[in-house]
Structure formats: C-alpha cells, structure tokens
Amino acid sequence: MIYFKNVSKIYPPNSPAVKDIHLQIEQGEFVSIVGQSGTGKTTLVKLMIAEEKPSVGELTINGWDVGKLSAQEIPILRRQMGVIFQDFKLLDKKTVFENVAFALQVCGTPSGRINKVVPEVLEIVGLDKKAQRYPGQLSGGEQQRVVVARSLVHAPKIIVADEPTGNLDALNTQEVIEILKRINDLGVTVVLVTHNREIVNMLRRRVITLDQGKIVNDQAKGKYII
Image 1: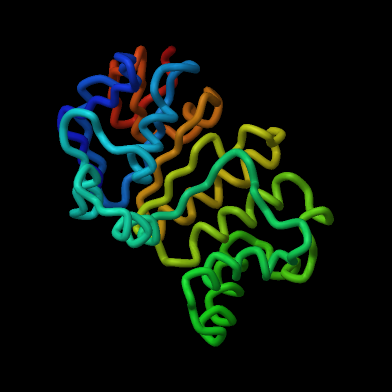
Image 2: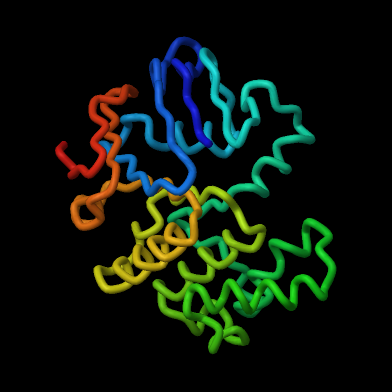
C-alpha cells in the first residue's frame, strides 16, 4: 500500500527534512503520524501525495514508484487518494453540493455520475440535509466535513489528513475524527498527521513518532509520547 524504503528528502543546499525513513502502511490501517513542529511531518505528507519526490530511497504507493512518476501520472495517482488539509479551501460562492461536485467536474466526470456520487459522500459526512447551503452558512466543523466529503468523491483507497482538526474546537474535532474512523471501517487506509495528543491517545491505533526527521517510535496501539 504505502512503502518507504530508506527514504530521505534533502532540500538545497544540504538540509535534510526526513532521513532514512523505512515505513510500511497496509491496506485498511489507521495510522497517526505525530511529532513536534519541524520534525518532518509536512515533508512526509508531500512525499505521500507526490508533491515532492525522494532525494534518496524508494517510495511506492499502490504500486506506483513516486520517484519515477511523470508529470502526467501524478494526477492519476492523486485520484486514488483523498487529501484533507487544515485549511478548508472551499469556494465561497458555491454551495456544499457544488464544492464537492467541483472535484469531479475538473476531471470531466459526467453529470449523471456527479449527481449520484455527491449525495452519497455528503450522507457519509452527515451533510446531506445541507447540500444547498454555502460555506459561510456552516460552522467550522461542517466546513471541514465538506472537505472530507470532497476527498471521498473518487472512492480513494487512501486518505491523508494533515492536521484536519487544527482549526476546530473539541466538539467539532471529535465529529471529524469519528467520520475518519467510519471511513476507515469501510476499508480505506487513513493516515492522520496531527499534533493533537488527545486525539492520538483516544484512538489507540498505530502511532508513528517523528523526531528530527527520523522515525523514533512505531507503536501498534500507541500513545503520543513526546
């Protein structure tokens, strides 16, 4: 599924962001990646979504060698993944339905398929009754749920969530995490990057801890120990 084999990412002139990462994440896992600021979490995400390529080592995702991907192949890989960021990046003048549909429209998806898929993913995140509202009419937690719905439209095998609750209060944080757990229960691999100790300790799932660009701990059912 996701396999880092001795991967390092070095930025010019000689600044290593992650160093000698050896990591395997299997289909259906729910994995939290934790660590303090500057430990390499963001770089790991960029590598997983093929925004960056390894300087050293090999990274394969669903059989794709990220280091050898052409510019034309990167969008194909990304459509097999759903990505959720802290910043909602919603279009203010589009409804909830239209925001989610837009991710399909840019790929040339037929309208019949869009009209089938969008209600399905909105139901998964509990926003089927708010499809015609605009982002400004939603709470922060609801806006993030729109982002989660948008990440599901291509039926991804992997969800990469980079600090998805960073802008949310405790109640909305819990709601978003519960949705991610439900998605994981459907067989989707979830990689959660977070600094939120409470989330990680509540999940009691696999926890990978980064420090100074290296994996320093990998617990099958762990806690945030730094």
